[in-house]
Image (cartoon, rainbow, N blue to C red; front, side):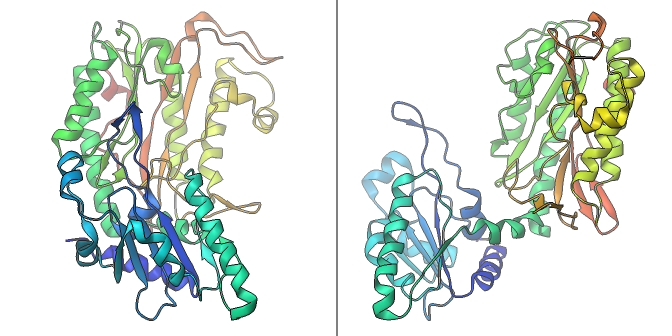
Amino acid sequence: MLHPEFKQRRDRFMSKIGNGTAIFRSAPLAVMHNDVEYNFRQDSDFFYLTGFNEADAVAVFAPWHEEHKFILFVQPKDRDKETWTGYRVGVDAAKEKYGADEAYPITELDEKLAQYVTKAERIYYHFGRDRAFNDRIIRLWQRSIALHERNGFGPTAIEDPSFTLHPMRLVKSEHELSEMRRAVEIAAEAHNLALELRKPGLYEYEIQAQMEHLFRLRGGQGIAYPSIVASGHNSCILHYTENDRQMQEGELLLIDAGCSYNYYNSDITRTFPVGEKFTEEQRILYELVLKAQLAAIEQVKLGNPWNQFHDAAVRVITEGLLELGLLQGDIEEIIKEEKYKAFFMHGTGHWLGLDVHDAGARKVGENWLNFQSGQVVTVEPGIYIRSDFQPLEGQPEVSDRWRGIGIRIEDDVLVTEAGNEILTAAVPKSVEAMER
């Protein structure tokens, strides 16, 4: 049975939209080549409110309607089509299993949808990539506008529901956290396996295969995102996914890989020697990134503004690079002018949940949002010095001994009333743990 939390979310969402009507479109089927479809993955907002996991569906929320407040339009049962593409929930079971007050075949959408919009004050709809469906909603709204003067009621505006729904998604319930903990647990086991397996001569894809095999073996849906298994100079490519290089003695291996479990995700990065020990330069930079990460994690706590953990990481990394002579100048000017971005060019983290880069704002106007208990954020500073590194004007040349080194360390951190909890603590990250 569907978890009762889905109904609680719907009720809460509908209490926020009042006399409006919200319309959500399911994710489309995606084709990888010709007529072969990717595995279906539901739109996260759609799933969050319904738990419904099929394509070609529409969910409608009309809290003002006397009888039908939650309506689903779904693909009807069809024995012949189900033989080819799998079982469908169908109209009747959509009500029974997913708690819809009413359900219709998706073919009746144009005929039935208007009745759930007629007396709404506004339409809530996110204009996505499905242009044909976007146009459908615009036509529906235009018809409502045309009838408004005659009837005296009907929607006069369209508003994006994200501004209502995404703040709800930001704070995770105990049920959501239990799903995320399982996603973390599986990914942690895979990362620890990779640490054991690594050795010169292996190919990056061999490590990737073992990790992703374990994701599925432990009941996960698979990868949360394309796995990054980057050795040597590939560790300086932030979103490297070819994973086809043979690893060599003396290099680093950076692995950024997460598991998806019941739609919830983990996101972990570790960097360690391919062989037994760090080189001197690798160890120095690794300790600097780890110091920055620990300083950033300290700032992930109730009431602190979002930007504070990033600023903490930036300051530690900039100080370290100045001490090493890789940057020169006044630290405040370097930070203000963002010259550190030659080495650390990305943010220190992002929200995590149903999406890997999860929904939710970081700022309102000019003000950063403060952390709330139940939010989950990644903390992932890094230093990357490409083999062809080019210093900024006025900055020193970088010796060859530093080149080709890329390091990132990433944990998933839960904000709690008492401070924070590192969900990914089962994956070690000390220098001693990274070496044999």
